[in-house]
Length: 301
Ligand SMILES: NC(=O)c1ccc[n+]([C@@H]2O[C@H](COP(=O)([O-])OP(=O)(O)OC[C@H]3O[C@@H](n4cnc5c(N)ncnc54)[C@H](O)[C@@H]3O)[C@@H](O)[C@H]2O)c1
Image (cartoon, rainbow, N blue to C red; front, side, top):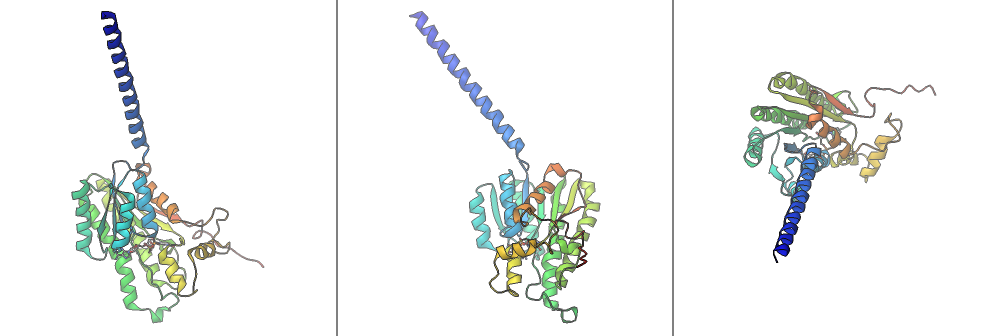
């Protein structure tokens, strides 16, 4: 009888030992998994997060372990995306042109998540419908609108991120190939995106003292709603696939055979700049342009 009780006790201990071993290995697996996530434990704000490049970045950041604050003026789209991303994300209405809304956005991130590690100033507009207008006919209301969103909005984002990023952080601003060269007659957009490249440099100089890195990400044509809407004004019924094909034509794009530039490609570059993998990169403008701005074709025939 005593022997049976002893055997039973041994089996219980062995069972408990196996369970503990299994739990320990699961824990190690969890730790390993979260260590593999490139933004594990980080809190990020993404402006213009409800569509296009911003939306792709929200999705990628969330998949890489970040707590994501989606900021946009498109409340319905923003809430829909938040529902898809789940509990580790939030939507916060923010018009980047209004400083008090930017201040509230940053404060929201602090009160909800206790920190802000990554600020992606991405919201932007183009001078839609006025492409092709000469400087002599530049619509000054349109000019102010583009400068307000693309320049003032970025300055607001940097200013209020700098206010709270005392222990380091990463600020990324969306420029464009128009930060480097002029394309077509979208003057306001080119002026604004050149300004973004300048803001990145001056902010990197000052904020480096606080361990805050500031970089730009500058894509070539990506077939997002912003671009399709503008080109549609000139080519009726054009689709995003058509825009991507147009952008990839060999006379438009040196880099061939890799498919067109997608919002996800841009998000991957932003992820690199947001993560600790880029810990010594600051003041840089990362171009995703397939050598568009660095090369010219010279046709003999
Ligand atoms: N698509 C391209 O080809 C391309 C190329 C280079 C740079 N960019 C830049 O990428 C950024 C994202 O554009 P996208 O192509 O994803 O376009 P998009 O239109 O899909 O997304 C832009 C988002 O910004 C939001 N937004 C606009 N004004 C705002 C404001 N005042 N406050 C807050 N949010 C605002 C819009 O609601 C929208 O959700 C922009 O800065 C744009 O200039 C785009």
